[in-house]
Amino acid sequence: TAVILNIYDRLIGSISRLRKEPRKSLSFLVPLVIGAALAIIACSNLISYLLDQHYMIINFFFIGIILGSIPMIWKRGTKDGLKPWHFIPCLVTFGIMIFTIVGPFDASSESVVTTLTPFVFAQLFLCSAVAAICMIIPGISGSFVMLLFGVYTTIMTAVSDFNFFLLLPIGLGALLGILIGAKMIDFLLRRYPQATYFSILGLVLGSGPVLFGKIITTGNFRLGMPLA
Image (cartoon, rainbow, N blue to C red; front, side, top):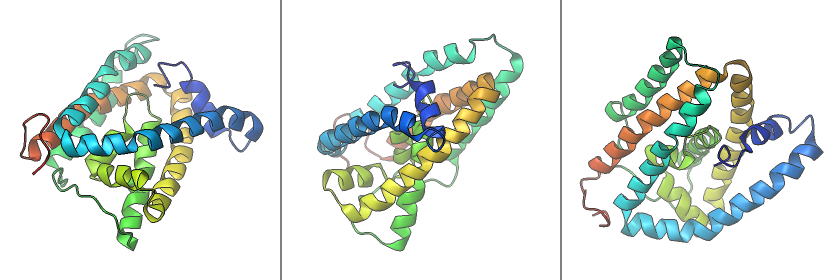
């Protein structure tokens, strides 16, 4: 969305230069953060309901969003020409995503957690940090990452119920992920823009089969039907 609205470069720059130019960065970031927070709060109950009653449709909706970003990423990746070696990082990241299908991940084990324990704190913190990093990468959905790790429903339920104890590790992880991710993406886009976008392309191409595999493993492929 940030790329489509032509604010992505400014967004990454504002986050990465937050300490050096706090006033300028905050004047741009604060309205975005407030708008995003309001949108999450306003839609959390609706999304929780849709996940419960129309699980398959929502997952296919995510697949459409992810795959629909491919033309935009290809255009940015080939802006300065296409070189054969650019496909190497694309194949590497595509392979990483496919590994999540055949690797030690149980896509059908997602359940709603409502009680905070040390393990749950660490899990939500790390998953939120990774999702936040992916969220600021063009074409990668933070929601998809949370779905992949099996914490999406837990996080959306915590937001809709204003569960402060669960929101604490989620918020801390997201903050850390955004700060680290912005620095990393800013460096890569400045030094290796084409390779970076082709790496992103591989992630996007691989995320479609991964999410589809998650849908299959639920054991209920009837669109619009709740999970058993």
